[in-house]
Length: 484
Image (tube, rainbow, N blue to C red; front, side, top):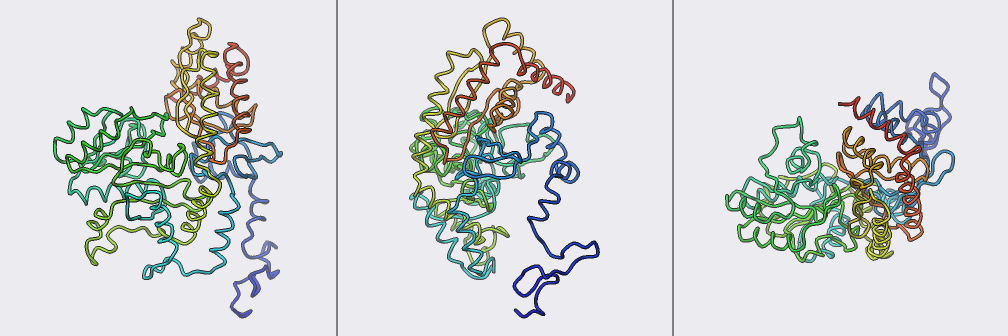
């Protein structure tokens, strides 16, 4: 490139040329300068241009922090305070934040200057990532790459309908599979569906209800059953033997089993895929979130060869299902690096070992605290559920919260965990008294100790029956009543 080819305000090497705009600022884009000048406006910008309810909610519960830096299972605010991340970006940050191996892979793929998304060639990275995913899934044969979990689910729904020639998909109550129209049609939480009808003619069954499954299959129009091996909304585990029996019924009626591993996959539950503990071989598997390495959006749908060959049955149908940014080199490099880290650092085993430790220690507190009902889960996917206390004083306060809005006690626990102990977590869903813990898979025993110590302090305060925690509960009650 000659100097005459350079962009305005930049020299031939892409550096700032010193040219200025009419306001006296250097021309060109500089991210550090932009953040330094405008980063403090983050909440105002969001309220003005994006979802205005998000900053409002964050202000109400005191979550309106200014985080500036992140690494692993921790991040830091502008004052240098260290926060422990028990959310992992709802599972996206499975490797922790800014893992050096993924960062290097992205630098490398950008520096390589590879042709990308030409549409009429076959780049090597998608094939290599598909090969690596399928090595962990030997009963499946092919992969479609999209950009998110909901897109992976949309792919599975389309492929199941086309391959079977049947229109209806079954799903479980309380499930969550995404928020685009197809995945919303198999969303087991009506609150997400309200106001977005008409949706697809799919049908919910209760989790574990084999009789309902058999009844629906007898109608002869069911393409598939889609399930989360462990439901993300509330962390509900399937009854033992249900998934195996369900697959036998599905095969009898020539319907497919779709396992949604968007949140549970890649080691979170202590096995590479959560369904591995259920002795099944699903026909389609969806994955996303942690596959991104926390950087580049990516989703994948793994399936049997015959399903793909039905969908892509001729050269005329070569683009019958595609994604504009699917299989881009940055996403593929992030996915390959992420799988390498999971294997090299033995994160599946870490998830099982540290997750068991965390769950065991928390479960040991149920006899100590009246309002701690149950601790359940698998690996680093743990639910802490609260319930109605027995003693009169605590029961009256609990009743006050429940009358205003179910789920407020769990929110009362979440807030002091952040404000007093610098631990970020959140309730597992609307109108349930459950906190879901899904920290990065690099979570350590020391991190588990920190969480249990903080959680114990918060529960001690809650069971004292007074103080700042219950004062905040009154604030939540007022807010819940005002929003009715």
